[in-house]
Length: 279
Image (cartoon, rainbow, N blue to C red; front, side, top):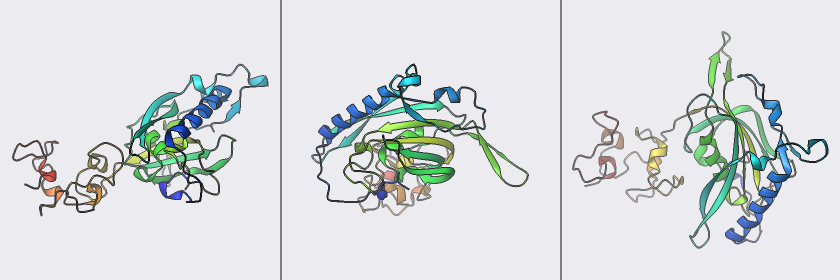
C-alpha cells in the first residue's frame, strides 16, 4: 500500500533542501486548491449509510461559480526535521465532509478505512474501496496525522454475520512531499510529489503493541509521533514494544497502575512514574 512508510523506492534522486522544497510545493498546493473544487453538492443529501466518491475538478466553464477547495480547508502545521536537525513547519490541509459519530483514533491506533491516494494530475496511485486494517504508526506522516481528525462510525451486524457501517467520518487531506515520500519516489509516485488522500473512517482499535497495559500512544513520551525514539532504559528496544520500560526487572504491567485509579503509580513521589523509574 502506497501510504505506508516502507513503500518508498530509494533512487538516485538529488536531495533538495527541505525548506526550499516546501515553499515550492506549498505554493503549488495553494494554486491547486484555488483553481479546483470538489463535488460538495453531492454530499448534501447523502444518508448515514452512504459515501459518495469525492471528485476534484477545475473551476472553469460550467464550474466557474463553484467554491474552491482553498475556501473550505482547515490547516495544521507539522514540524519536520531537516538534515541539520532544524524544524521546518509544513502545512497540512484537510477538509472534513462528515464528522462521524464516534471517537477519534490516535496516530498510533489501528484503523479500518477505505481510501484513495491521488496525484495533482488526477492519477490514482493507491486505492482500497473495501475497508482494510492499517497501523497508523506505520503510515507516512501526512496520512498518519490526518486520521485522528476523523471520527469512526457506528456498525450494525446482520443476521447472516455481515455488517454495515454508518455515520462514519469522510474527508480528504492534501500535503507536501515533506510529509510523504520527499525524494523517495516509486513507480506510481514521482519524487517530490504533493499528495491527496480521500478517506472513509469506519472504525479503529486502540493499540498496546507490547501488551503492557500502556497504550502505544502513551509510550510516545516526547509527543513527536515517532514511536521508535522513546527508549527509557536505553536498551535499544522502543518503549512501545518493551514490556519492562525501565529495565528494573518488574514488568511494566505490574507497576503501571496497581490500584486501578487510572493514574500511573509513583511510589517515591519523585514525579517519575514507577514504570519509567528504575530507582
